[in-house]
Image 1 (cartoon, rainbow, N blue to C red):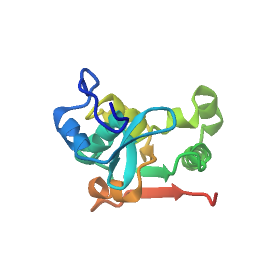
Image 2: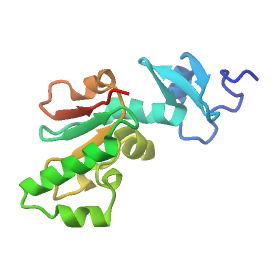
Image 3: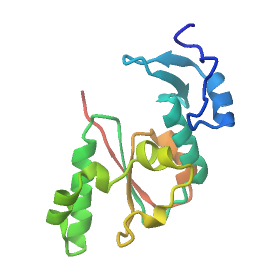
Length: 165
């Protein structure tokens, strides 16, 4: 079998829905350095399960006006930006920021859309996400053009960090 072909038993019990399998079969395919199969969707390479999460996010995410989204390319300061954002938001509330980071990491406090929330469920219950927190704080490695559809016509804020490599 060619590394960029779909296996015959593609998608058996892997949580990828039929319509996504059909989409994947029409996309450019490749394999990363670890042997993970990838597909190119909207100009970005995704593992199959991550693509399912991205599609679920695009279909199901309903932003609140007060939502804040930390967006970044992987390994470009994501953890630092999450920690800084949580500390600033908690400080403005009269803060318990020193206790927050002893109970969880920045990645635990600020979940990824496509790597946590929508990877586990096609429609996660975001009301349980830190009930006392307003604004809600999320993160993503999805590019801006992938975020546009669910976020159009909303004043929620996106904070983007990048680095000059």
